[in-house]
Amino acid sequence: MLEHGGRLRKAAIEYGIAEADWLDLSSGLAPWPWPIPEIPLRAWARLPESDDGLEQAASDYYGTAQLLPVPGSQAAIQLLPRLRRSGKVGVLSPCYAEHAEAWRRAGYVVREVQEQEVDFYLDGLDVLVVVNPNNPTGLSLPPQRLLDWHARLAQRGGWLIVDEAFMDVTPELSLASHTHEVGLIVLRSFGKFFGLAGVRLGFVLAERKLLKLLAEQVGPWAVSGPTRVLGQVCLRDTAGHTRQRKRCIDAGQRLFELLESRGFEPHGGCALFPWVVTPPPERLHEFMAQRGILLRLFVHDSSVRFGLPDTDADWLRLDQALAAYKDAT
Image 1 (cartoon, rainbow, N blue to C red):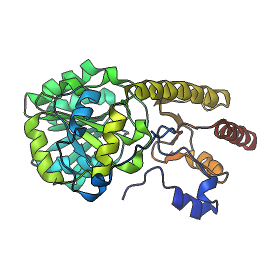
Image 2: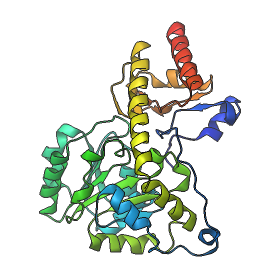
Image 3: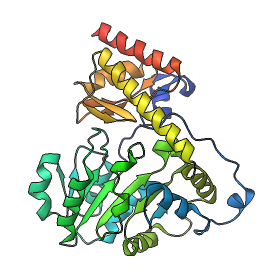
Image 4: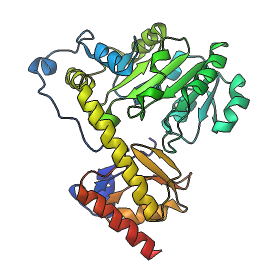
């Protein structure tokens, strides 16, 4: 298993600090979870059915005519390699490490490429994977550039996979409306924007033939009945979407400014997180963890990622810890 953010229990044991006393900024989630609606008993008592309205609610929200609910976009990341024969896969890196890992495990030749290298390598690839906005760098590529890459791949039966896990704050940049085109696959995460990662819900947007093949790999009843009820309520709450986007944008800007004021100028990021290159990153990560503040550490990229604080007390706690770190170094 690769390392991920959100491993709060492990940190609590390692540092001897109770879970309730931590400020967890490691996961890049909106810190304002959606209100949980009342879940009807039948959702718990019966097997889930696919004509209950979830697909329509998600299609309306994302702006596409066809999609497949999955138990978290991670499930799709692991299953998509089963739908092709062996070949060469490019992964725009650094990014969410599970993408390259899934294709390697399935026997593909994987090349991790940087943005400026894609055009050089593209015609030799069968699949290109892009996280947009990127995690952890926050790099956001314009839709037309991605569509140009897709067109070159599709001419040879190739795929462009775009992981839009952090796209909800900027939906105008999504490729969702283009996913009827063969060879374009978009992954969307539910838990990050709605602050409900624990429900394990995601969506794959692609042309119908591919979705049918993927559904056979996912299997029946993959998304639970209660999750389907919850998902519909959240996806249809348009007023809530507007409020959440504004909160994320405002908090993201505030966090960027806080880090800059303490001498940690972000090198990238998006509304849900800034990304800071600070070699050696282990020193900052350890200093914060000793004070019950959990950051996301990226050793290979000499960087850390900060999630959004919630309360005024959380903001003050982070500010004081950053000031103390500067004083100590």
